[in-house]
Amino acid sequence: MKSGMVVVNKETGFTSQNVVSKVKKILEIKKAGHIGTLDPLATGVLPILIGDATKLSKYLMEHDKTYIATIQLGQKRDTGDEEGKVIEEAEITSFDKLAVENLFQKLQGKQMQIPPQYSAVKIKGKKLYEYARAGEKVEIPAREIEIYAMKCLSINLEQNQITFEVSCSKGTYIRVLCEDIAQKLNTVGYMKFLQRIAVDKFKIDNAVKLEDLTQENIIPVEKLCEKYERIDFDARKLELFLNGVRLTVPKENGIYRIYHQEKFIGLGSVNEKLIKRDVICS
Image 1: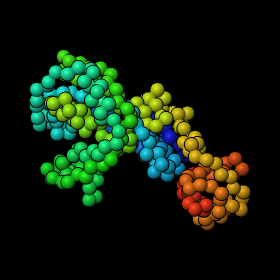
Image 2: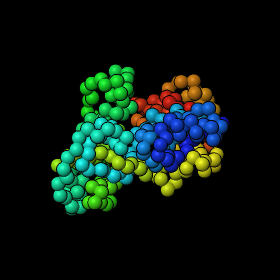
Image 3: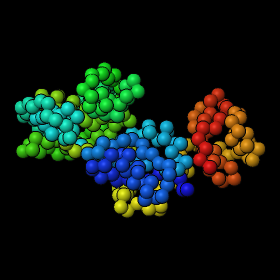
């Protein structure tokens, strides 16, 4: 089975797990998993690891992301998006693009964010949306996120909508960001539209729709790891490495690609000049 990643352009209406199941069927594979969940209403870049590449998820989950979102002002919904019930309505005070752009500048940087009640974040082994659907209250701890850049793309005063682009860290909930923006504009709002246009270097221009997906779209495991420095082992050292023996290497702490005779073996982690096996993809 060929291992690697496919970058799917997810359509609205599918859960991320729905897409994984369809990828398995199309590519006739048994093992696959997505990195960076997209809500059913959201569209855009959904990277899916297949085969041995699923072992790399702990490294690839940390990628930064870029979105285009639309806020609907004047209403607040329990889910934070268009699927929810209206729980509050408020008048919309006048504002212009300059006011929005100034607000976006202030929102950039590190900050604490409380995940939405309707999300897959787990508290005491149970997902938050399970508590919400059961009508149970649970304390949700805030998490640190970072907004790297925001820009206003358009303002539709007739529809009371703001469309913007945002680049942010892993774990940022755009639904919550939309509600915060509305609040700072002295009203309420919810996320009407969301499209993820990038996950790290994987862009929507290079993402493929499910109906066009083939084996040719698989990005090899080796390419996914190319940012890490390379270490070559001879046959003896490779055998020891694969058996879990920690080997001395003149390298700084970090993750490294391991090769033997030009063949990519996997990843190793170095700590205090000792390297140990981490992810074996061969």
